[in-house]
Image 1 (cartoon, rainbow, N blue to C red):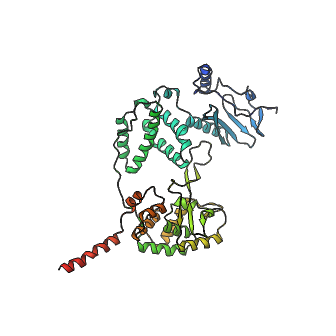
Image 2 (cartoon, helix red, strand yellow):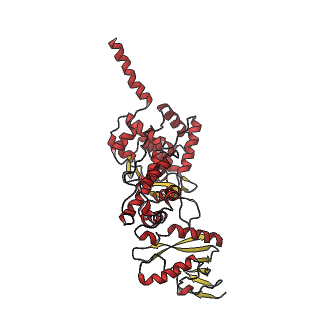
Length: 438
């Protein structure tokens, strides 16, 4: 097979988003070619004209030439690689993304999905917001929000947009969405048995997108302003009684995987924070635990990803979540014992990898069943720790910092209640008063 050497395939392909009037005709032809089976397409000199079957050498790899009008190549390792435009850098240079698949048709499908996801707002959106809401939402997600938020936050944004925002607002004109439309949307969400907190989270994503649309001049008024939201329902968190806590601790001490459960019960760490601990975070000499990262499995919305979910390690939830916790002697001793048998960088690992939150949650459920206790979620250990500290008259500010809360008020609002057994104990003091009065 004849081979030809050329430059890297990372070349600029003019897209329809150019504003330069001198490029207008050329961009129009490029758009037309992309939308009509690739009859008109601009290629770099190294790959034009494209002839099926030819092979080019780029970056030390063999590629089979792309079919006409499609940026899909056969790699030297047997996989198909598709290339698409993700956007532009501040200096105007194009940014490319890549998708991979074992089969050509699968790669083509992933490439089409990628192009749709990363497409910036159409020309209509740039003309005073006369385009569709779906175009701006996608532009806001991938072009504005993604570079500035954590991976897990972006994953939540995309999930909310796909499930709630785009089905309701997607086909509407951006400039035609009014406050009454948003209010009706909130009403429909509330009618689907969603909790007030969930409704507020969905509204928050929509509000953030519309706020940017107003800032950029696409709309004159944010339709989310002044909308009435469902009131938050304050529910007492489920936690362990003293008796249940003693039973769970006794069972955990006898279980080979019980240390992580005990650690949560005596420090209030979140499940992702426990899984993210490395031995460098544990100061055995001074008895201090440093919390600075978290591990979480999230939905992956990148078209090139081979899995629907991905395990991500990120910074702690907030600035306050990055904290140093003095360890009680009982937990410090368990750390010293665990260090002798632990192998690897992470304090808790599974088959050579950091322990996943869901595996730790499964182990917790199994431990509850083994102890004969009612089913509760892992976060109840954090609630239990905070409540025990309140009952022991911990200083609110100190407890707030141990928990990693943003303020002492948050800690007091969330845990400023007492267990029923303590309420009964307090009320029994009235019996003595009644007897004295009698």
